[in-house]
Amino acid sequence: MQASIHTFAEDGSGSALLDDGRLVTWPGEVFAGSALRHVRPGQRVSVEVVGIEVSRLWIVGIGEGEVIR
Image 1 (tube, rainbow, N blue to C red):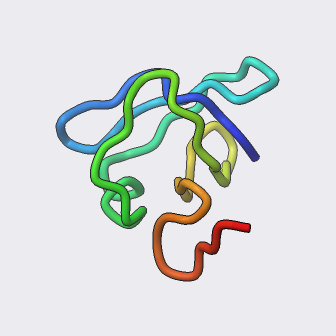
Image 2 (image 1 turned 90 degrees about the vertical axis):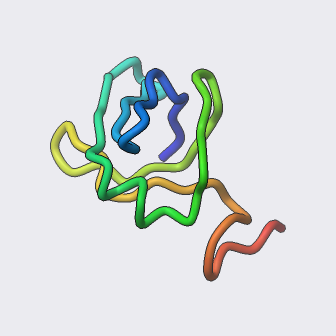
């Protein structure tokens, strides 16, 4: 699903707003495994969510197996 970055901390943790308005968070470990170097508030990302926490964060086309179509 798609989301917009809400916050991003130096340790890699952060939060995002889903398109339905829900706020979800992720720990630094999720960002460390994302192949991303930085995100900024308002940036659109793809996320997988378990409960209210992001389990995977990525931008289509960045990282292993991500192809821009």
